[in-house]
Amino acid sequence: MKKIHILILVLVACLVMPVGLEAKKKKVDIYDLSLDDNLETPEIDNDKQAQRVQDYQYEVAVNLKKQNYDVELMRDNEVIVITLPAGQLFAPNDTVLSSLGAVSLKPLMSYLVNPGFYKMLLVMHSDDTGSKQYTESLTRARVNAVFDWIDENASVDFVVPYALGGSDPLVDNNSMDNRKRNRRLEIYLVPDEVMIAQAKKGRINIKLMSKQ
Image (cartoon, rainbow, N blue to C red):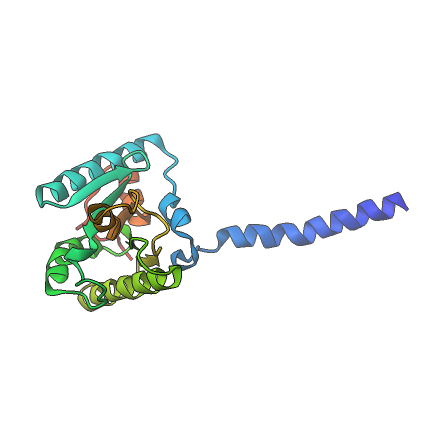
C-alpha cells in the first residue's frame, strides 16, 4: 500500500511541476500587483547593473530637485519618489485636476517617453477628515483624474494608479498644517526592463529606444 501512495505522489508532482514552471514564464501584469510588489519589482540582481541604475536615478533626482520638486530616493537609490501636495493639483474637496496641477505634472511626462523604461506609480493620499469610505472615494477619484490627464498627454501603458485614502499619513493629523502635508500625490519612478537592459549594456539613456 505504501508503494502505491509513493507512486501517486510522484505522478502528482510530475503533473504539477510543469504548471508551476509555466506560470513563472508568464509576464506579470503590473496592474494586478499590489503597490509594494510594484515597488519591489523588477529586481536588479547584478551589482554592476544596480550601481549604474542607482547612479542614473541619482542624477534624475538631482535634476528634479533643481526644478523645485520634492524628491526622495528609496530602494537603495533605485526608485525615485516625487511628492506633490494635493492642494497643488486640486481645489479643496474637488476631484477635477486644476490648471496648476496640469502645469505641475507636465514636465514629468518626459519620463514616459520610452515605454518600459520606467513604471510610474501614482499614489494618492488624504488626511483623516471624513469617513474611511469618503477618503477612499476622494483619493480614488483624484488619482483617476491624474491618470486620465496623463492618458491624454502621454502613454499610460506603464502607469499604475493607487488610492490609499487616509491610511498612510506622513504625520499625525493633529493640526491644519499636518493634514495639509498628508494630502498628497506620490509619484514613484521605478526602473523597468528597458532601463535594466540598458544598464546591462553599460549605458542608460531614456531617449535610447529599444529595438523591436
